[in-house]
Length: 136
Image (cartoon, rainbow, N blue to C red; front, side):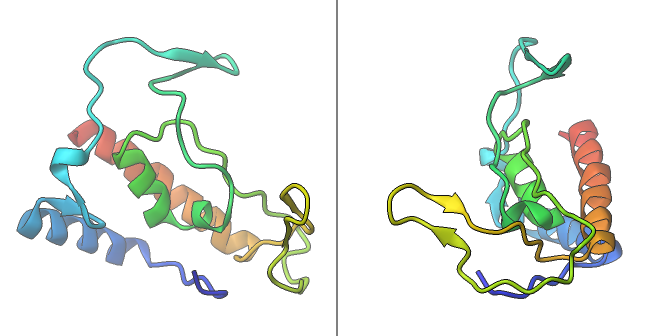
């Protein structure tokens, strides 16, 4: 994964999803046959909310981009740990920022996107996930 993340504009994401699905029956390279479709009404309760499955991606740079959140949702992710963003989003940190000599832990609290970019990515993902839920 590169060091610089580039958000995709919402209109371009919509075009990407619809054109790819229309022509190949895939979304972000994931075949429709691998989309998670809940077959029963069971769910679990997490933080007083209902969740279809207890699986999903852990926080990391990958959970800052809309298309990665959508991809995780398509294959069954329903519990998302989003990357924390903070006001001091312009600080520079040496990479890699994981120290794994004994046990792995994050040695800083960086964000790859600005606050505004991260907010936009999460809003775009929220809209797309609700749209996909209605369609599939």
